[in-house]
Length: 463
Image (tube, rainbow, N blue to C red):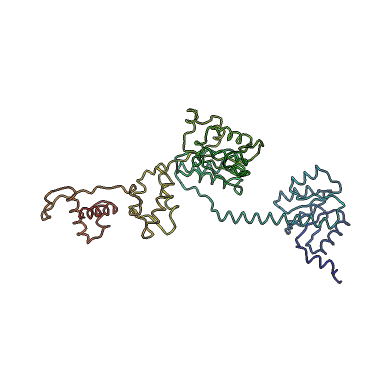
């Protein structure tokens, strides 16, 4: 049988895709199936819902064309069953008796289009192609999100001490909720890392994560940054600007240093937390946003409330799910794990330097540790970090004991100063070990950095 040249020419211009046609009217089903097949589409026809479900279990389809009114299982019931099974094909619903109520119901179940019979086949094809385009965009979007998630490694909360184990358990519990979170702790303890971990473990992981630091902005700009402004609303407002609440709409807004939020803006923040309402500066229009708030502070907000520096109602509204991060000095063996996490894989810290790291009080907490290690990696001659690569304030000076004078030792200098005796003793030890400074430092009972500083001071004295 010779193929229809006109139909063949038309099929060549069409981007084909697979269609599941579900229709109980034999005549319409057969004619529609033949027409779409001649146009080059991959069509499989079913007479009812149960047959269509079996077809979907055998293979996947790009688009579904379902009749609304079928005996046994309606088109909407079929769509609902497929969604419950995790099938996300794009579906166009056909019905002979259309109504707004059924159209709304179909859209709520995930149908992308709703057509009434009789529908010209050319128009039907157009709607099927639109549905397929929508499906392609959705699939591409899903692939891009997967690529993006691979390019942004999962946030890892480091720590095995009891306090950090408790923090990780809280993060897991509260992440799926949409309630506000307040993270407290000293500066540098990793509050933003915890906020990112909450967002990644939540249902908003693929939505915006926007950050703002209230302490880093001048008070005059905080309101504009958070809530936006209209053009001409103040000097320098040359164009309309959405605030970060609008930018984060549908996602998460991390407000760092919440305790520094000016008192004049605290009522506005409370309003957003209560009902999602905000107004840009210079605008009478009220906007609605849906944003999860994660806030952080190193201040004692309860004390600030008692002193009248922070609104009590805002404090209780933002402190729904509290998390407190311990300082690094109270985290015991977590220091070793953090050192291993921050260092490149080929680097390690020698025992002497590690002793210095463990003895330090870390007033800057994890941030200070990370900065110290980044500096040490840059300064290290090899892939081993030693005390020479650490800041001076991390290397605790150790005074070495002066040995008793033995018979045969060279006479003491005429002035007998401690400085002269120290120089004499250090140089003698260096001669004994043939100039090996590491051996000399160990014999003297001091760090190598201390030895180098002594030798530099001896040279200065000579000049």
